[in-house]
Image (cartoon, rainbow, N blue to C red; front, side):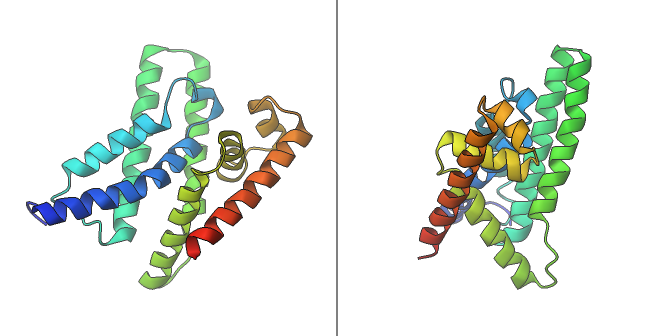
Length: 192
C-alpha cells in the first residue's frame, strides 16, 4: 500500500474507529474476572489501534476480513503481553492459573468468531454480523453488557455470572434476559 495520502489516511482512521467498539467488546470478553482490576479493555484496544495506525502503509482496511483478523490477533497479543507484565510484577500461583483461563477465553472467542463459510461473500457477511453484534453490545447498560459477555462469550455458568456481578442467580438470569432482548432490539434498529 505504501505511503498514504490524506484521503487514504482519513479512510483508514475511519475504518479503525468503526472497529473500536467491536474490539472493546472482544477485549472485555477476553479479560477474565480475575484480571478485571489489573487490565483495562480500553487500554488494550488503544494499543491495538496505535499498532494498526503504525502499520497503515501495509494494512488494507478495505479488505475487512483479513483486516479484522489482524486486529483481533493484535488485540490478543496485547492481552498476552499485559498478562506477562502482570506475571512479571507478581509471581504467584494464582496468576499462572489465570493465564490458562485466558487461553481458554481466546479459544472460546475464536469459536464464536470463526465461521464455516466457504465463500468470501459468506465470510464478509458473517464478519459484518459479528461486528454489528459486538458493537451493539457496547450500547447496553454496563451490567447487562458484562452479563451477556460473561455468559455467551466467556462461557461462564449462570452461577458464575451471578457471583461475579454480586447478584442472586435469579437476578442474574433476569439481567441476562433483559440484556439479550436489548441486544436483539439494538441490532434490529441498526439494520433499518
